[in-house]
Length: 327
Image 1 (cartoon, helix red, strand yellow):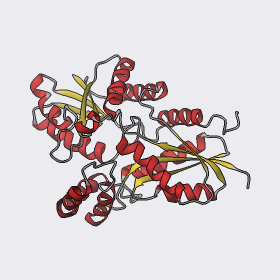
Image 2 (image 1 turned 90 degrees about the vertical axis):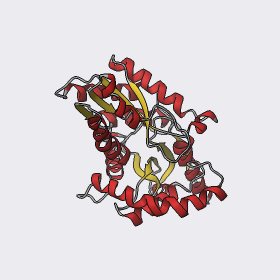
Image 3 (image 1 turned 30 degrees about the vertical axis):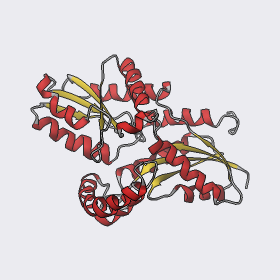
Image 4 (image 1 turned 180 degrees about the vertical axis):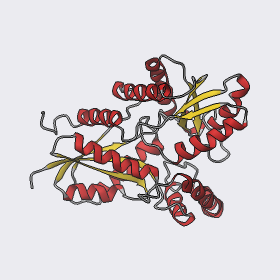
């Protein structure tokens, strides 16, 4: 068969089912990654296996059950990533074959790289779907791809999609979708909150650019919307100091500051997932309303909607320059 070009979209990962056993397997892989938890293994492994994997899976499984796609029997993240890969594949030249993988869980990066190569892809673009770079996300994906290549006798050529936190197509797509979402509300928000996934403050202090890139995204998005954004960081884990302000604490405090109507967006996520649909849209709403808030709206991520796919198509074609035959 003639050579083809492969594109592998990669997101962070998901359990295979909303059950404690499946969540335990997923968390064991995720929290064993040295990129994710930088505590020395001799100290961390007893905590992970003796405490976290005994208590957290049941709680997380209950959270997953609230947002699970029962029709397709997949998590929202996996279902949306599958849809993104299918839509992007239809939007790219015929010589480009698009697949998807998860850094943790299935389908695995090594499996999908091997599949793309078996389909005749001698050149592959690895596309981590993390707008802002972090060692715990983008770098971990590239690490996993490197390990997969190390096991291959005949390796395909590999490129990787860089972080796109300040790319004009990304900012424009976000602004357009958020503007449409705001226009559809039956109230005018006092604040627009932009919640990004958090990270330990120590990680940022050691030189990870994630925090600065989140700030840059929010600044550019605010300019495109013509409205100020209130930035916060979610998904704290453990007792260490994390990036601030905390989304949970911010939502609890906004009504007392006179902001009784808010819209919440998550511009650091390429696809809706547990952290957006359960943590923000459900628990975040409950926190805000319990504190005296009146109106709350969570506006979804770009997901596989046409504007988001158009944005991804442009970013991917830019990285495929010289590989794909010009139209």
